[in-house]
Length: 162
Image 1 (tube, one colour):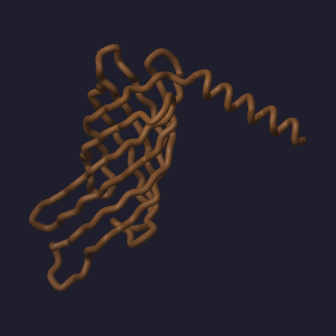
Image 2: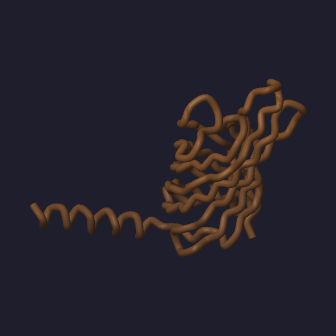
């Protein structure tokens, strides 16, 4: 049983490592979805190794009734599917604040901290352009922003690579 487990684990590691594609050192752009009202985020990716990178996203929202900001950091693994087409997965955390000004005498504001997951696909063009589509569940750890402590976000990302 131990040999079988070791063999399967070794094969998976070799498969993921062998199919890795070189990722850009830096990428900056936008990530647009609708996670609890942070529709568009400024997004930055930094390669850490051949198949690992860090993604940092900053979202903000402000109008006469509401103000909020959120900073998320996601550690990702990137694997090649074919050519410039990759898939990735990762985990991280987010922190932010919100202030609901719509209802007077209603104390609805504060700091929140999330645990984040991330899985998605991306296409790396021959020009320095990267387009991605990802799914990011966010679990409220300290306070929760939105209606409950689980936020589900599907987003489209467009980034310039350098």
